[in-house]
Image (cartoon, rainbow, N blue to C red; front, side, top):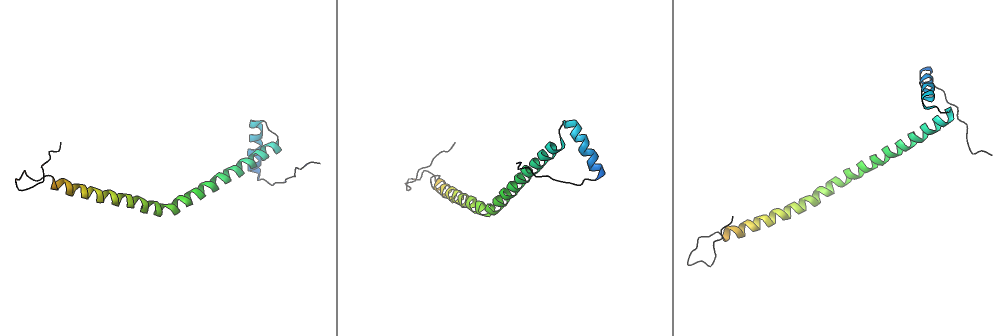
Amino acid sequence: MSTSKKLVINLSKKLYIEFNKALQKDCKKRSEFIREAIILYIEEKKKLNYMAKMKQGYLEMAELNLKIANIGFEIDIRDFKEYEVKLSESDLSNDNNSKKRRYILC
């Protein structure tokens, strides 16, 4: 006993003509052609659904990722400012009363 099911479809005359042209071009039987078309349609829908879910996930994570990036950026700015302070302190003239040394940076 076959597990196949029959399918009856109605096509416009224009679509029916295009369908027959495609059958002749691909040298396929109608049932084989329709089966492949249905499989391709389902696979494409799955891909589009997956891409939509991925887009939604990226949009949901965007704010959190921005906060994490800003935390790192704020730390870098703080470290850079501390470095500039230390650099300016070491750039004092060679004063006999000062224990700081003047460094020449190239």
